[in-house]
Length: 319
Picture 1: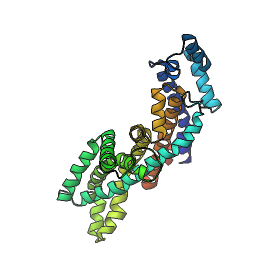
Picture 2: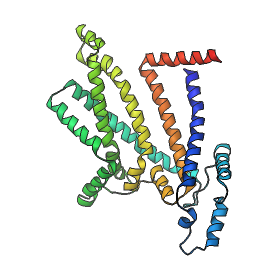
Picture 3: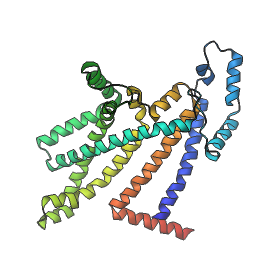
Picture 4: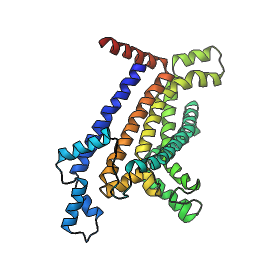
């Protein structure tokens, strides 16, 4: 198991380098001139050229790429934002905890509400509770986050005046971003849990447990739920990754000062150091979450852990 984890951690280096190469190439070839955006409209051609020279934008592609890789992976320097004139690392350290906290609240809320609802639907299959919740969850999956966020602002801020729409000055500022960010997750978890639980209910070991006369609560929580949770863990991991990477929508609507809003600002202003660093950090976070999900799989299901152990032993023999 340890060899498997070390192997996956080493693959993070490959993921980081490949991500850096791709995002640098994309930002290099997309239209747009950072000098035109950053400097005033009255700037002369000579001033724009001087600005490009100071940032190395007039250097050949391979020179710029080599300099970027050296600064990022050798000196561990993400550069300075052209728009804010502050180190990118400093901004990321300040913003990432907010984005991460918002995403964790969304995931916890989606799991705490969606999973019990899915179990209830499965245990009451084809009853009115099941049909009602499935219709609501279908609506929840279909509603775009940005539309829901705008509707929440119109209702709770513009019409009722209960909640602030922008910023993070108080706990009340977090209410609408959490609702908008977790609503689809609740619906997805409810549907996935229902499907997984129904498959597990029909399993032979559940039938055997009931035939032995075990209490229904024991059958559900000891035998059925642990097996039904395995595919749900994958869904939660994917949701956390999506929540971190997709916060640009929620953060832009509510002006939430996180990584998503920072990256969107960098894209609009062709602030290359900001965009490259945000994409690199988010991709590494997604890779780490994927690894953690695999390890949780092994903790929940001993069969998967045995596969990892066997795979590690084979790798050691080949060496």
